Image 1 (cartoon, helix red, strand yellow):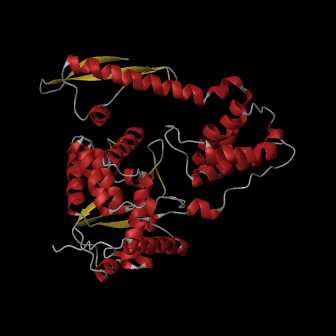
Image 2 (tube, helix red, strand yellow):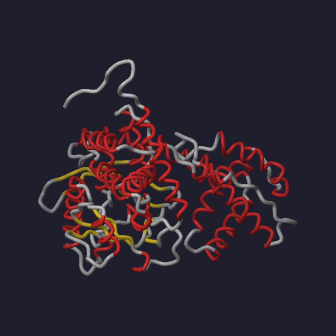
Image 3 (cartoon, helix red, strand yellow):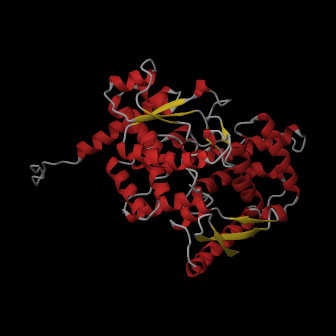
Length: 422
C-alpha cells in the first residue's frame, strides 16, 4: 500500500491511498469519502499521510488474513468450490431476490463447520452432526467481525442454507436422500426484551458521542434509524429524490393517522427499495419488485434529524448538479457510510457512554416499541414500519407494556422519600 499526493482544481492538495487487490488483480484507490469516514477529514500533510498509511496497511492486511482463513476450505476441499458455484446459480434462479442470504450463510458458516472443523468431506455423513452444528451455532458461531455471537434469526438462516443445499444436491443426484436440520424455535428467533430497546435519552447520549468524535455520517444515520425504524439496508437506500418538506397529501392514510394522533412532523421520506451487500438497489424484504405500491412514507418528527438530512441532501445536490442527466435516485444521503467501520464506531460510542451495546437493527425494534406503545395504533405502526403481520404488532405492544411495568417497579416512595420538586 502507498500514498500519493493529489491536487484539486483550485490548487489545494491532499493525500490519497492506493493498495493492490490480489484477488481482482488491480490497483484500488480509496475514495476521499472513505478516508473522511475513517479519519474524519482529508489528509493534508505528508507526516499525517505516513501515520495513516500504517493504520490503513494494517487494516487491509488484517482483512486479507481474515478472508484467507474463512475461505481456506476452498483450497483444502477444492471440489466444494464447484458445488458452491452450482448451488449459487440454482439459488439465483429459484430465489432471485433472496438468494444471497443462503449463499452467504452456506459459505461463511455451514461449509467452515462441516469441512474445516469436522473434516467431513463426505456430505452423506453431515446429517449425523446436525445436533453438533446447532450446538455450535448456539454457543460459538460469531458474526464475521468476531466480536459477538450471531442472532437466533442468523442461526436459522444458516440452518436453512444447509437444508436448501441438501435439496439442491438431491435434485442433482449427488446425495441419496434429502436430510433436514431442524430450525430453532420461533419464540427464540422473534423474542425481544426491554434490553434491546434504546431509550430516547440513550439515543441522545450515543448521538452526541458520535458527533463529538467527528463521526458525522454515523451520528446522522444513528438518529435517522432511531426515528425512522427502517432496516439497515433500507436506511442506506435513502436518496436525494426521497426527501420532501412540508405536509403529506391530506388523503394519504399516513397523513390521516399521524394527524389523528397529533404527531408533528417537518417533512417526510418516501422509500421504495433497499440496498443489498453489493450496493445494488433491490426490492424491500418480502417484495418481488421495486414499485410505488410497496413504497413506505415515513414522517420526520425530529428537528435535529431534519436538519441533518437537509445538510446531507444539500451535499448530494451539489454533486448532482455536476452530472449530466444522472437520476437523483443515484445520490444516496448516506453514501459515505462504511458498514464495518460504522458498526465499530457505534459499539465504541455505546462503550464510551457506559451503555449496553445495541445493534443498528435494535433501533428498528426501539421505534416499533415506542410507536406502538404510545399510539396503540396497529394500522399506523404497520404502515410506518412495513410490517404485515398482526403478531408483530402484538409482540411490540407486549414489550412496551413490559417497559411500563419496569418503570412502575422503580419505587419512588419506599424506605426513602425520593420524590423531588422541580
